[in-house]
Amino acid sequence: MTTYWEKLKDPRWQKARLKAMERAEFSCERCGDSESTLNVHHKEYLKGREPWEYHEKQLAVLCEDCHEYLHSREDFLKKVCSYLSVDGPNSRNEVAWFLSGLIGIPYGIVLDWSDSEDCQYFQTLYENGKNYEG
Image (tube, rainbow, N blue to C red; front, side, top):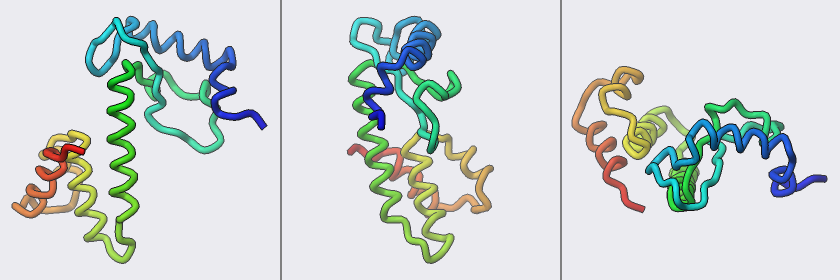
């Protein structure tokens, strides 16, 4: 069985990686750094898909600092989701509001997407996510 790290040596991944780097003009797509080592980050992982089988839009070019920061945020999101109660939609709604603030989706857009009414409680949850420093 081939490990994930061995798959990253595959010429098909190297080609996809180079294409992403060229698209980003060999600069971090988050901070613009073009001097540091760059990584190509999968924005999501889909079961059964090889690293090179992702659409270009699913790959982000990041400097090492931004890549590490992004993974720390993702680790936090996984931790928050692990506490998600499965015994009712209200708790899921509360976590969704918190997470939307954390990942920076504008409050008005989340309000439009949700069936929630604008209220101080959800705005507070959103602001708590927005102001979280982990």
